[in-house]
Length: 224
Image (tube, rainbow, N blue to C red; front, side):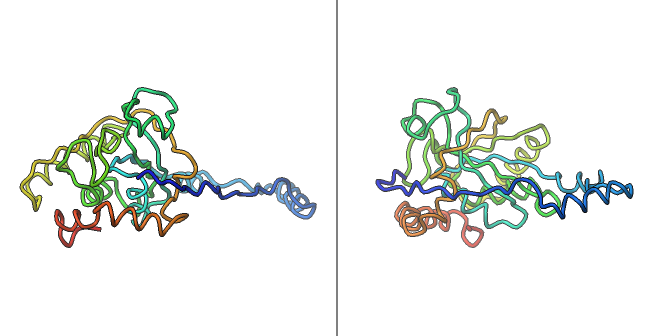
């Protein structure tokens, strides 16, 4: 997935600081009447009710693109996890010297999609029958793994694996690992949303790498 010409243009966001005199006046009137602009505890709790999952499925461009399509997924971040070197760079990870895997951190709304459902989706976006590679990418950075953030996720992932072992539509054994999550490091900016920023290059890479063809072979109509 090494791209000789990577568009490193980063999307900038402008933050508006301060408030207009009218808003300040309105806020003071609210305070005077005993009404604050703060959210109620219930509203704050509802807004903050998100969970995080981490999956390694080979090229993180592809994993990110697959999870972004799932209703209830709020954001995805490409990055590195499972290694021993703090704050690794892409060059270090792809050089296979840090022990990290390319992975994606998924933030989701558990009222719309459960962790168990995400795990079930994950299986069908990867080839779980090969070690230290995915499709045309070889080496430990492209291994497949589920990195559980807590005991509940660990139990759900193991239960999903046990069920899959009984129902899988292929004969090969599943070698994808289930591990406790360690530090997750976000990848460089040009890797984030790569499939959106560089749709032609991404499409060419995904097709030429044979990802979707192999997924169709493994999972049939359940493939993404």
